[in-house]
Image (cartoon, rainbow, N blue to C red; front, side, top):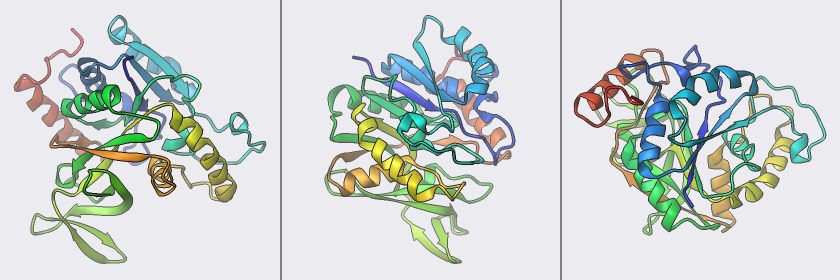
Length: 300
């Protein structure tokens, strides 16, 4: 059974200022998602599921359906504010949806095979899709999941600090814990640091970080559903609190329900956190096209 690619595209793109999921970066207006799907098809994925907000469904489908018809099966999952499907009989006022792990849960009735989760607005590189496809077809189990571990120095922006999930990895290559560092940046000496309470702490340049590229079986839906109900109960008066995938991973590891293999990649990750990142991403993609990694017209 071919694995499924689940793309998180329901975010608000608040820092970027537009719907960057459908912004053009390639030579013919290709979006970042286009490159991820192209790599996923090449790596052997059989279906792509988009998690979007229902009000964006028509414009979204109009962009992707013509390109992908006949290339890969497509499916749409709607992330909403409605808590009733999770057995929570209350309405809670929020400015944004409940976070990435809630978005994954929204797909629980539509995915029945091993799958991976990625962000819509991140460029991951073919190596990651190839390694994840291999894991999902040969190694994954209901108690054995994975994430792609990027080298921290290959994930930073020149235009400001970023948040990174810093992984602590054991001798077997499994994640022990993941710590969200909210201010990570290049130091003046070219090294990498994170700042907390005004104090800079250096990080080794080959520290592994999560860029939200996870591999699961459908068992994760059952494993995380009660966690979500507990999270809502504890955070109903915090409209900005979010139920993130690392929270689920952390609980699964600590309760010995699942391990997470950190699959290392030397690929350069790039994404658009800031408006100023756009020309850099365009240049990176242009360089990859010029060196023959991607065709000039991706879907020609």
